[in-house]
Structure formats: C-alpha cells, structure tokens
Image 1: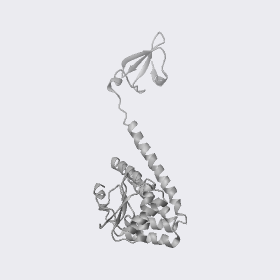
Image 2 (image 1 turned 180 degrees about the horizontal axis):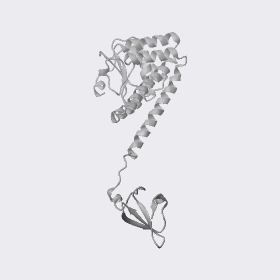
Image 3 (image 1 turned 90 degrees about the vertical axis):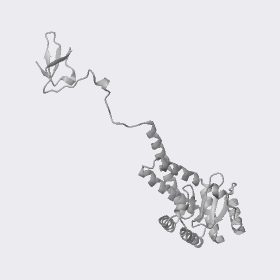
Image 4 (image 1 turned 30 degrees about the vertical axis):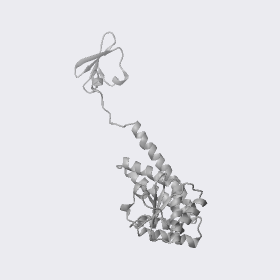
Length: 258
C-alpha cells in the first residue's frame, strides 16, 4: 500500500474524466487515486482511508469505465472492510475449514454485488461488453502479486466463469444481493459462535481427588444390609461395615437384608 502511494497519478485525461464523472454520479466525496502500472496483474482497488485503483497501462476508455465503475461499487459498499475482517478471521481460525469455505463465498458475493450494481445501469449489449472485459482482464492476473486486502476486478478463471454464468442466467442480476446478505449474515453468526467459544470451554469431566475421599460404590451382588434390633440398618461392603441407616435409602433398596 505504501509503495502504491509513491506511484504518480495517471495522466490519462480520459480516465481522469471517467473517474470524476462516476464519483459525481455515485456521490462519492473521497475520490480515490488512480495509478497505472505495467505489471502482470489485473486491475484492483485497495486502501481504506486513501483508496487506490490500479489499472494496467494498456487499456481503452470503455474498459476503464467498466473497471472504475466496478471498483467504486466496492468502495461505496465498504467491501474492503468486509474483506479485511474475513481475512483476519481466516488467519486466526486457519484450522477451521468452514471459515475458508465462508471466506470464499463472501468474496464471491462481494464480486457479484459489484457486478450487479454495474450491470443494472447497462443495456443488454453493453452488459456483454462488460463481461468481455472481465475475460480479457482475467488473462493478466498473477495472483501472487495481489495482496489479500485488495479487491481485483477480475480473479482466477473459475471465479470469472462463475460470475459470467451467474450474469447470463439471471434476468434480474440484483438477486445476487440476497446472496450477499445471506453470506454476510452467516459470517456474522460464525463470528458470534467463535467468540462464544472463548467464554465457555468444553473439557472432559474429571473428578477432584479430594471429592473422592469418603465416597463409595455399591455392588448388589457382594454388598448387603444387616437389620439391627433398633430397626436400623448397617451397610456392609465387601463384608466390611461402612455406615448405619435409620431406614433403607432408595438407592440401596436392591441390596439383600440379613
């Protein structure tokens, strides 16, 4: 992030105009920086207080419009913060496979919501151009060069295929917002469950040795009661006197009486 802040802003006036136009349209006051790098990586957005959109050098104005629009949707809905939270949880609970599955689904949902918000303002023909841009940018990805807190415009091929299929199958792409809400709620529920595990620790039961002293167990085959003249009962365990009862306790009712 600090390295990206040192990179000069883009001088491409077409891209600058697109950014300003979209920020005004979406009422975004914290206008992100836009830089262009000649790297083997797809476009992405990163940064909390000082967001940065990274674009490749070789890009048309139409492609820049699609990408900037998509990345602004991430900023507008605080997706970077959500991504940061799920990454922190994944690091802490790295041993839990459910967390990694949830992480993947949350990331998918973030991308689908951004796609939905972009495509709802596009005509059918322009929407196909948007999907073509997704495919083109996916070819420039080197996932090792994108940090975990960045939200790339295009991801690995399986994700691109999933996003395109979802877009083509859905007449109302905004239905994916329901998916986002579902997974976000599932994430919140998982966080509560994990925090609850810190409060209550489940351990195997172990008897304190100090509590064992003075206690005994009874075997109906070897132990018995002896009736005394005063109508009380002596308990014998392994032919040894243990205690006297004025009446037979219910739990000893199965013992023989002599």
